[in-house]
Image 1: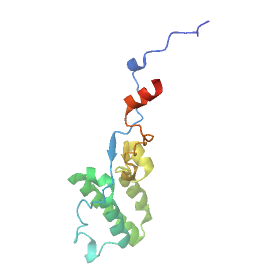
Image 2 (image 1 turned 120 degrees about the vertical axis):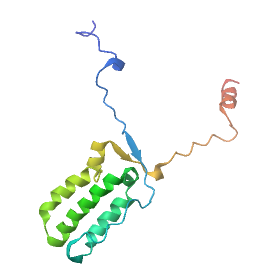
Image 3 (image 1 turned 30 degrees about the vertical axis):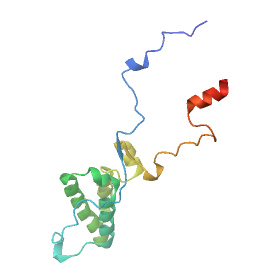
Image 4 (image 1 turned 90 degrees about the horizontal axis):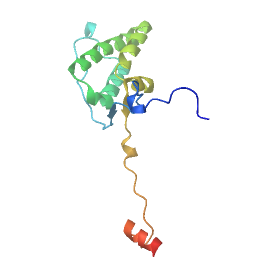
Length: 148
C-alpha cells in the first residue's frame, strides 16, 4: 500500500530552495587595503590608541577588505573613533556599538555566515590527483586490461 496524501511536489517547482552554498567567496591574499587612519581628527592632538591601530590593521589586511568601497572605509573610520574612545577613556558602553558595526563587515564566523561570506583557505587548493598504478596510463588501457 502506498503512502497517504498527495505525492510530493517536484523539487524544481518548490517556492523555497534553501541554498547551502555561500553567495560570496573571498580569498585571503595578505594585501593591505584601504587608507591609513587619518591624523588630526582626534581631539587635543591625541594619537591613536595602539589597540585601535592594531584593530585597523586587522581590517585592512582582512579578506573582506577586498570588497570594501569608499563608503565602507568611511564607516569604519567612524567606528575606529568609537574604538579609540572605548580604549583610551574606558567608555565600554561603546563596545556594543563597535561590535554591531564590525558585524556588518563579517567580523566573526557567525557574522560571515549571516552575510553568506566564505573565506576560502588558499592552502585548500585543488587536490593532487590520485596516481594511476604503474603501467596504466588512461582509461582505455585499464578497460582493455580488465576485459582482455
